[in-house]
Amino acid sequence: MQRNDLLWVEKYRPKKIEDIIGNEEAKATFIEWLKSKRRSKKAILLYGPPGVGKTALVNAAAKEFGFTIIEMNASDTRSEKAINSVAKPATSYVALDNFSNQNQTKGKGNLLFLDEVDGIAGNEDRGGVGAIIKIVEEARTPIIMAANDPEVEKLRPLKKVCLLVRFQQIRIPLVIALLQRICLLEHVKAE
Figure 1 (cartoon, rainbow, N blue to C red):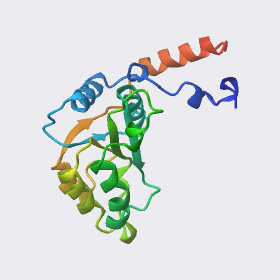
Figure 2: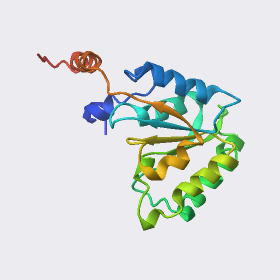
Figure 3: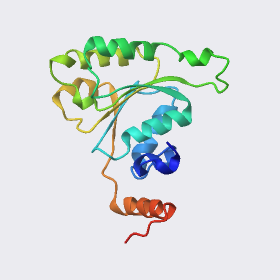
Figure 4: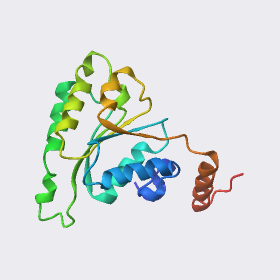
């Protein structure tokens, strides 16, 4: 598929940190945490309403800073066994491609991203929160979580081991400015 055939939501998806609009304070806190060699907390929980840039920020920052993202989201089963099978190796070792001669730019290793962590629920996810806390305690790599609703009762113990970063709804003038820029690039006349 050519770039012109892409849906606009894909074509204009933020690729760099600077492309993400709004939430400047939350972005700055996240970037400072990600860059830090001595993090006060090994994990970070980005929370706020859907569509405000939490996942986009994680993807853009990982790309800019050379991390390989290992991701689990709400569609994955997040039982203790499932989390341990994906997350333990991801947070324990340096990325394998760092040892490859073909990879000329040395990456920083893995970054574990648990998206929609507030979706952990039910019998199929039994033990998931406990497994995540244990992995956070033992991790050698950054662990990033995103949630829409951090007040879910099951997340209470998880919030104690994370730096919490709140994302707000994006202000309408910022959204309008972005849409105007896209319309200009697409040669679309809009009110």
